[in-house]
Image (cartoon, rainbow, N blue to C red):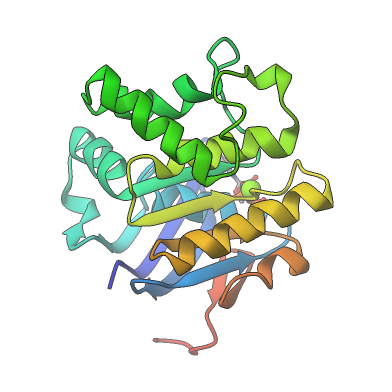
Length: 227
Ligand SMILES: Nc1ncnc2c1ncn2[C@@H]1O[C@H](COP(=O)(O)OP(=O)(O)O)[C@@H](O)[C@H]1O
Ligand SMILES: [Mg+2]
């Protein structure tokens, strides 16, 4: 088991009034899973992803990731867990515009204290894996949206995460580039990376091995209440 959420709730506050956004979310993922969570805009997908990614804390409930009870970890411990186990891909690529592809991909390794030569080698290897071996020194504005997203995927993978988290990874891409990103995810999953992807597009969700639906903060994993 990689993760388990049990009875997770998230309320946002409008002044003093709680606004429930996640309502009793229960699910688990095992090694090698590839899950898509589908739901309409405003259903709580990004909120859920922020919980899974340890970027925000639930209002209540239990979250176990990589054998650790996330609710008991301090913020710096959470940062460490994110660096060690998780890779993130977002709809907007969040590349640094003045850094070339290699340096963008190497950035997480810099934060992890990896020496320069090894950083560069590993970043370039990751870029070759996503098919950008000919673009190692290109700046983001010299590349297409699909290529920028592949840089972001290389950056997410360069630390060998256990779990790749993707929030609407094809949302800003044309369909051909989106298909390339989906091919890449399938390859990464086939090589052992566990993948959790959020999307509101059925054709994209169908690239995963399992599809769960979220509606109005309630996640349906097909296992029924209390699963
Ligand atoms: N920081 C926040 N403060 C208050 N409400 C929020 C915040 N973030 C999200 N929400 C609300 O929570 C609901 C779910 O948002 P979100 O998780 O972003 O949905 P999705 O990603 O499915 O579109 C929305 O109604 C949104 O307005
Ligand atoms: Mg969202």
